[in-house]
Length: 155
Image (cartoon, rainbow, N blue to C red; front, side, top):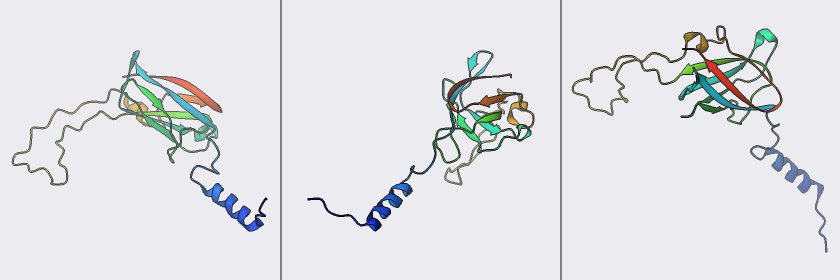
């Protein structure tokens, strides 16, 4: 025997499902993965950011990723969903392995009688122009759907 369900219960169930984490959000317009290279060799530990190009009339969220040991990246939106905005993008690359040469002190938790000798600063493997959205020579057109992009930067 079937039980009759009230309209209020059905409506409450539908609202609850719509508010469930991940539900109600449209899928990202584009999913992007790729490899970052310099002179044919992969670059690890680099921040890759795709910024919609306002000069080309593009709007949307910035998507970013950090390259792994093989130079591979997969773009994520600010809410950590995999994806990126479609359209013309400026690509910014920052080398995260750069050091300042200053010793790190962890909020006083390390008892240091003599500060260690600073290591010499390590220069960025990537040209400074790639770190600026206004100066980067990398421009990419993203289309809806999944795409694999190979990025090549200069030292």
